Length: 397
Ligand code: PMP
Ligand code: GLU
Image (cartoon, rainbow, N blue to C red; front, side, top):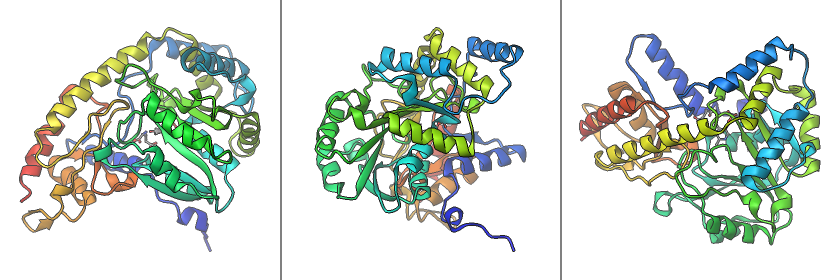
């Protein structure tokens, strides 16, 4: 008899990847779908990074890599953290893995005991809750809707803390809301956390370079909590390298050692070629990052303008990442023929089938009533998708 573990049965599939798959299947069947579901840059990896990978192949970087990653890459990451974030992490405090996703999961598995509480400000990226579940932790959601620009306050944070709280996961710029915590807002959270020395802080900074603010900050900058911060970041978003699968964690030595032990037992070191490419990305010219950032800012302005033309949507002005997260519950209860929209999920399915635009239901991000659109696609696609959504939405009465 085949048995699937309770651990995996309890796990939800990734809604972002599932929707993207569905959209790809429709496309393969000849339907002209615009995919705004999955969040990944639509740019190609810059040429100098690809050249570094080709060179690594020719130079026979073909053997197992050290479990925490090549020392040269960890040195490049250490230099990046000093240069850009003004924080010092020795290469020994850094572990490279198969994307930020793996490192987030590794940190949770390495630090969380069954029953420990992990605070997650929501809306939050789909995988956080599931990863906490895998680690047998208990998620404590702290909700901040569009009316507070999706950012939790220090008072909300403090109210969620209990003697069982062991970690908080922060993500700024945020997937799915595009919100960015300012220096002062982060300081407010850090000042609360400073009072609770048993709480570790997992800072998912993967969108740090895709921001439309003067300065982007990470909680790792605050001295009063720094020794408990674990940064997770990677090359996927900043350098358009989602498929290369390189991310890292940087944090206290004990956490880096625990993550290395875990990684050594179940995946080993990340791909040799991809690591050499990532090293080139960090050490090379950074103009490509700014060029892509500018394109995302232009698209942000475009989609925010077009979203205003859709009656009933309530949106913020995202300040980072590449998502729009409108509140769409005014469509709940409306009908087209005998099809009734009973939830934001129904609205998203209706838009897929009626407008051929793939988005993701807010419920996947712990925020039913909302939906997420990724605008990491061409200006033409954005215009056409929003036109279709407007038309399909107008049919709902
Ligand atoms: N964190 C957030 C908030 C993300 O949106 C993503 C992208 N899926 C990741 C982490 C993981 O990125 P990757 O594994 O590609 O480095
Ligand atoms: N960050 C992307 C998203 O949220 C990638 C897909 C995923 O890994 O969830 O759509």
